[in-house]
Amino acid sequence: MYEFNIQNMTCGHCAGAVEKAIKSADPAAQAQVDLTSRTAKVQTGIDPVTVAAAIEKAGYPNTFKTL
Ligand SMILES: [Cu+2]
Image 1 (spheres, protein in one colour):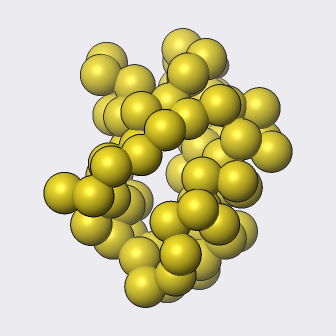
Image 2 (cartoon, helix red, strand yellow):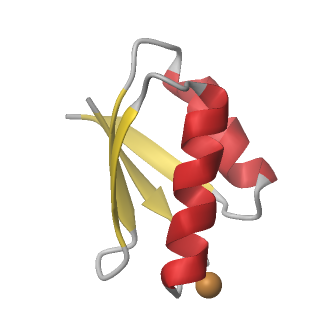
């Protein structure tokens, strides 16, 4: 499980775009996107760097840590 801190995620549309980006990187990922804290908790079996890159490519620079 990883927690991503996501910049520029300011509305429901952004949260949807972030979730879509996560799923595009790993269709099997479980994602809980939280707009208020601008974070996403993600359960994934793939390299989190790949997930981070997909989120960034969608327009949301981010950092992540392992939970
Ligand atoms: Cu938005």
